[in-house]
Image (cartoon, rainbow, N blue to C red; front, top):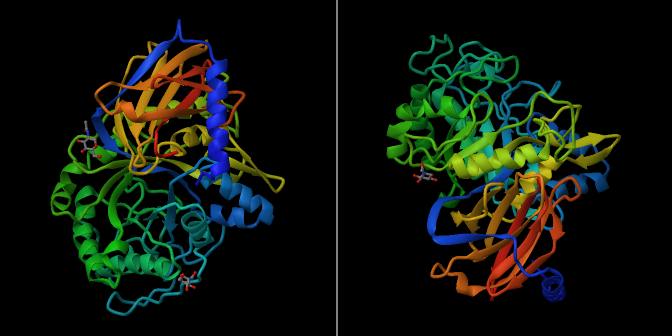
Length: 482
Ligand SMILES: *[C@@H]1O[C@H](CO)[C@@H](O)[C@H](O)[C@H]1NC(C)=O
Ligand SMILES: *[C@@H]1O[C@H](CO)[C@@H](O)[C@H](O)[C@H]1NC(C)=O
């Protein structure tokens, strides 16, 4: 929301900048082609699962607000537009366990589940309410790492095992828990709805090819398809109104390739309209080409530098935790991998790692440039934006264009070179560029964190000076909307 006064200030700034910036002589021009369209963008986000939300709740009220602003504000934060929650499976809350909404076994799948909703969900409900109601985040993705242990072949929510009753699973003496697990997931969505949070996307597995010491559950692709055939009708039969029924996602595999290999078995549930979205992580293989074998949107739902010690740096040597590296990783997923969303693993937490983007230390939060790199996308490429064609720019510039729902055109520019480049950005003639009336730009580099960048506007072209090894987002606005 822009008030009349700030709109006036913006237009004054744009005019001042216009006189200050020199005419383009040695620069380069990036031309946007609105008639060349690619995937629709659903958003950019992160997670506060595994009790990371609890860590935020223990900060002072002022720091809690800072943390939430840094994640979700579209004026002074990263403007993240997707939150990924963990659906708990643990009987307890020790360590970072995500507690189940039905922690005690009813003994048999034929008995009603013992729901024990605590109105907190390890503080994820609070973060979700803040995201949805204070910051306008529409997309809440709830994903289960495992079913509760009593529904599984290994009797434990950790250490792999699978859902009792699935074809190919070892027989469980307690019976077939497939329908109970579908009921459980739908009840979770209903608990959130009763607390005024709409869960838009629902996942029932996470890294199903991995057995590990925390919540984990094995599923093959055909077992996933088998379960979707139970979960989808369960959603339809529930009391959830049609506009509050989440889309079913699958399968949050560890890498782009392992997810790709599951698509064949999922095709029947895709064709039947029961599967809404493909999700994959970026650990074991990168999202560097479009996934073959699906027509559904594909989200990259978990990536992080899991090795390095905490760094907030933008660029020194192109290290795995540096912001510039992540600006490029996201570019690869969106432009080369055809991803419709990109999520970093954790938003805010304590600890000397780069698994998160915002660090808690001594009761204060500190944002890394990984966060601001994600924000250079998220704040300006809004949900519903369509990726469009760009051309020009030269060897050192990576560019990507997006037409937002409000008519603005966001152009992302990454300067991979060691010197600044003067760049003009315009919408190509005949593809709707006549309506562009003003420009604004923002930069992240070693000196800036989504800082305002001087931008000139002349005859439909916005001109900016893109610093060496920086990421700049240029937004061209039509006359009637600012
Ligand atoms: C949900 O919203 C309704 C209507 O605004 C309100 O009456 C109710 O108290 C809210 N419930 C919760 C749990 O916030
Ligand atoms: C990109 O993803 C969209 C779905 O979001 C799909 O329709 C399209 O075919 C994909 N493009 C390529 C080149 O795979």
